Every structure is written in structure tokens, then in C-alpha cells.
Length: 530
Image (cartoon, rainbow, N blue to C red; front, side):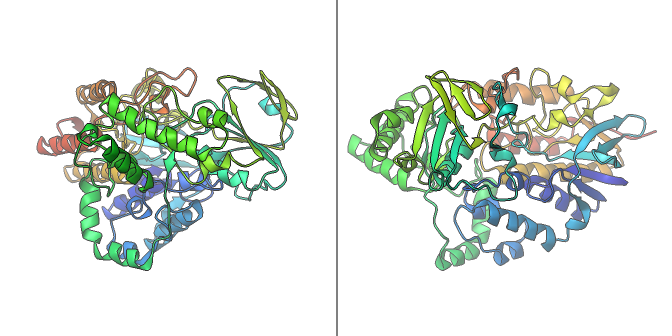
């Protein structure tokens, strides 16, 4: 099959890219490895999986009619509702005809003589495309720690990032959950309420705060629709892509009792507002950050009955915001259940898995089900596994052997006509808003190339170097993520430590896009075929 644009990945970003490319008049095909659309929200169907950005800020904003006809049930929708929404979007805009599910890309090779890409899938099908857009996402490749004996375990094993479509029955079972990141803390309260016993294996505690989810009332639904244009203006221009208003003062502008009252307001606020609407110096001033962390620590001690367990759940070596902050519902309360226990893997690491359970340095414990909530090969994992070969046959995984180098997080030198919105050096905030900005720019760029009679476009290496240097340099400045954060790839053994998001954020993206347009795309090398 020959098309103008081949999109890989049917998540939030890929669906939008398909829509934009089609509306711009390109012939387009989308390939998806999964058996349905949704990307992250197709694969991560574990109990408790839900947004931690407000539903109406996460969904698409390109159609007022779509916004008006879909009523989110909760401020933070659960996975089944999210998957229904994305299927509704696909059918509402007649996109399913151009989506082929159950088709995993195994190689993508650039043909220099033709200025096009040849893409092969695992079913043997082959596609030729002028432009290849990999919307494969940053949370696509589940990570399993290298623990001896994992293949020998005789019970059930599941990764939160590859949850089965059929429900997992925890009732009366002995369950282990390994990992307490964003997925683990959502799943643990659900399992705790059903399992005969639940043992949580924790390597790194995180600064968890309440999600404070609730149904969206009819009055709130009406307000959202009435203020659609105003909401879009805020979401499309804010630095992080949230509706939350920034605070008007720094931490120590308030007296101690005022700070405690404000922290309580933050604790009761929804989701990411605890990061985006907190004191203005929270992420920049260690003393300010320590005040907020001390408040959270006291909250944890007040919720968890056992002092030793509470102490294990309080981070000791990270500031708030150094890791992605998880937002929880009933997480700390779950540890008050008599059937729930916590194992600190820094004190008693896992030695091996056996046929019947897990052995730590403290002994063996039998289990019926083991859940791996151990995260992903973040940012580059999917792209470096697709068999992508650019000019001269260079492999993308070799090109990025020391970490990703990009321009605007959408292109890399040596790989003409290849784009990857939503990949490395992408969102530092509400993902669909930032990734949508990238898709809009990619589409506008394809239109520019077509309308000016060009056949190929490749970023100038100097522009790529300038952008990547900015990302690396700013990533080491406050507010920076901790060196052990998966945002640096350090959760994957052997992966080079390089920052995987855009440390300059959305403002830097907007500024650079404006410069590209103002200078007639001088950051790219444009050419016509002979």
C-alpha cells in the first residue's frame, strides 16, 4: 500500500495525527499493534487505572461538537470510560477505515533514492509512505526487572502495562504487587479490598497526595460547556496545559499558621493543582519544598496506623516533584487492612522468584498472583525497537546510543521525512495538550513541504544540537527531576542517563516553533527529488 503519511500508534496522539493529516488532504494509514485503539488507555486496563489530569482537559478540543456531545462522568475518568471515549472519537470522525489494528511494525527503512519509507509489519504486510509519523508514546514498553526465576513461577503474572482484557480474579488469592509508582498506587487499594492477602514490594516511596476525584455534577457539566472557549484559551496557552491557576505568593510570604492552612487547601485540591497551584517557589527553593514535604509526611503518619509502615511510605531522599507525583484514592488507608503488608526492598531485596512465590533476603513467601507495577522503558523504548533505519542504513538505536537527540522532540538528523510527536523531548505537563501542539506543527510542516514542491525534509544537525543542548542543560537546573527518575531513563539497566522530556517546557516549544515559521523553516533541510 502506498500512502502520503503512515502513522504508527492509535493512542491519543496517533488518532489526532491521523485526523489532522486526513483533514489536510493527505492519504493516510494508521497501524496499531493492539487489537483496539487507545494506546496507553488500551493496554493499561488494570483495576483503578484512570486519568490524573481532569478528563475534560485531557480529551480532544479540536471540535466543539465533540466536546458538547460527550459527558465525562468523573473529573478523573477511569480506563473503561476513556477507552469508550477514544472509540467514540474514531467512529464520530470516520477514522476507523484508515486504522489497522493487530499490526505491529517490525521494520521501517528509508529509501534515499525515492525519498520515502518502506514499513513492514509482523503479518508480512508492507507499506510505502512519503512521511512516517511514529506516535508510539512514552509509556509503551513495559519494564520487568531482571529477577532470577521469573519464568519459573507457577502462578499468574501480570504487568500493569499489559493487563489482560479478561478480568483478573483476586478474590481469596495471595497477591504480590511489585512497585509503588503511579500504576501501583492506583491498583493496590483495589486488590487490598479483594485479595486474601496482599504483599506490596516497594523500592522507592513517593510523595503521594489525594486525587480528590468526584462525579461531575449537572451544574459543572453546564459550566464546562458554557466556558468552552475560555477553557480552550487557558489550556492552549498555559505552560503546563492545565486549568489550574498559579498561586500569587512564595512559601515564606505567609506565616507558619497561614502556610499550614494553605497546605491543607492544597491537600484537598484536585490532582496536579498541588504541583501547579502551590507556592511559587515550591520547586525552586529547598526550604519551601521541605515545608510541603513535612506536611505530607504528617498526613501519612495520621492516616497509616502502624508507625513503622508509615515511616517506610515517607520518602527520605527526594524532594516533592523530583519524581512524577502520584495521586491516590485510598492508597495509604489500604495499609491499615489486616491482610496488607509492606516489604521495603532496600532493606530486604528480592533474591529470586521460585515456582511458588518470591524469595527475599528475609525468606520466601508463597503467592498465587504476582503483579509487576514496575514501569516502562520511558521515552525511547518503542522507537528503538521498531527497526527504524535512516540514511545510509543507520539504526535509530545506534543514533541514540548515548540518549536521544532531537529538534522540537519531533525529528532527528539522518532520518528524513520521519517524525515522532509525543516521544522523547516531548510533554512536560498535560500530555495531550503538548503532544497536540507537536501534531499541529508536524501537520503544518507536511503541508508546507507539499505546497512548496519539496519531497524531503530533515532537521539541520545544528538545529538539533541547539535544541538537545537546551534540554540537557536545563534538565540539570532547578526544578530538576531526581537522578533516579525514569525521566532520565535510569530505571532501565544500561540505558544512558539523558533527560527524556523537554526541560524547557511548552513556552520553549512555542518560541522555537515561532522561530521556525518566521525564518521559513531554515532549521530544516528541504529538497526535491531529481
